[in-house]
Image (cartoon, rainbow, N blue to C red; front, side):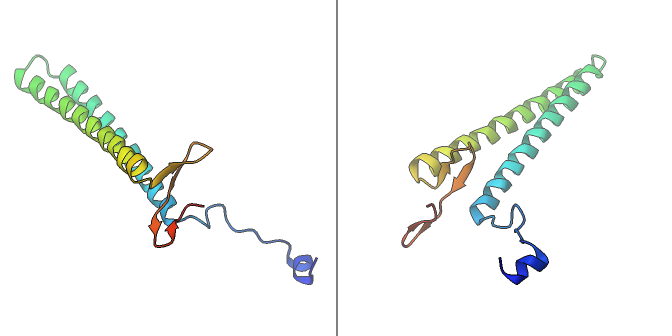
Length: 117
């Protein structure tokens, strides 16, 4: 043990100190889809609330139906984008790979190969 370790102990870096660009991109995608799903759920619930409180007025009912339909379409589009991203980036380009613990890892291509080890 050297004198610095006796005086100050062993310094370890924070848990996420070595995050890569790929890890940051994956975190951003997960956060985006989480927020997208929450917003779609919120708009569906608000549409249902407006439908229930419409008191039979046709204009309010059609407006609530449009709101629910729009939120469902947004949710389907978000899931479709995620599926297409997985197919293109994962299966076709081999940029996204799944890790042993079930997470994602982005392997960006370089001149000498890619960033995955």
